[in-house]
Length: 418
Ligand SMILES: *Cc1c(COP(=O)(O)O)cnc(C)c1O
Ligand SMILES: [Zn+2]
Image (cartoon, rainbow, N blue to C red; front, side, top):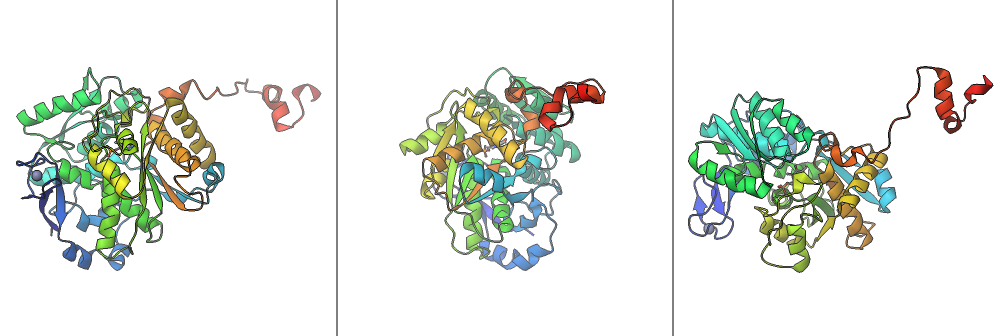
């Protein structure tokens, strides 16, 4: 049973059948999945949801597949909780974290988009999947593709963090490290995709892939007790996630799962790669590509595919955008770890640092509800913090050595008194 009517051009509105198409033949606009919302409304009810497994597939009616899901049964429904200690540090009243740093199986929100993309790729009959990635997408296609029994060709910039490279290689895909930045990798992949019969998850089946991001937004609403927060701060790379969180909330209102809601969406980017944030601040119509230079490699897309829509999602909601320097990113990673016990990757540092600045500027009022989107895990991006955290206290395996080193700190008897 499918609830998908077809694909629709996001620019001119022309309709297309639900096949492997991704750009409008008339205006070159990108295509988006369109659903039969009346049918969805009848089937996707709170009562129905109550008995479904806690994975992203609980929202199946709003995901673009035809049959039953075949990939990612354990993905999604990640932790969501009130962050009291971080709220105190930031001087705000009601702060929440949506934590995809512990997403199954590859510790980033990309497991959501890949679960949907690979299920759809198998329905189309592909036996080979591929992607252009800044690291996390690579890990997820490598892992979920292995479990789905698919051949995998994965293209990354050659200078990625070791955690992201090992985190792909372990699953034995064909990993291609391209000597260039992501935008160059992506351009190459468009050429390769036109020649080889592969499902490039973020190129030729992108309309289906991108819909997986909506589940991050659905979960925020459900886990907050069926309401929308007033402010959501979202990290942006290609600009898809922020756009789809906006779509998710509109859909829940449309099918009656949520009363009228208008959360403000804020784009977070690194100062060294902030094409979307710059466009928002200038209220411009065109996103100017930049050359990335930042430690937040997972967000280092200089020419974002959904940059225009991300900008619109932020501005139309009444939100804004903010960027963070490498120094601010590292400080925010440490703050999140010290207050809430979460080790996020550089992208999470970007998001928290941007949220902090938006609060300090008064753009996000201190008394209103705020969700900070944590989308990736710090064990994958250890390089930037490696030299910044000090070292363990090193001792001999004796009580005397322990007390000699730490006696003062723990208030115990110094070793020599014993
Ligand atoms: C890919 C990615 C994002 C941004 O996703 P887009 O949808 O491309 O904007 C955010 N956080 C992390 C950790 C990512 O890997
Ligand atoms: Zn069009």
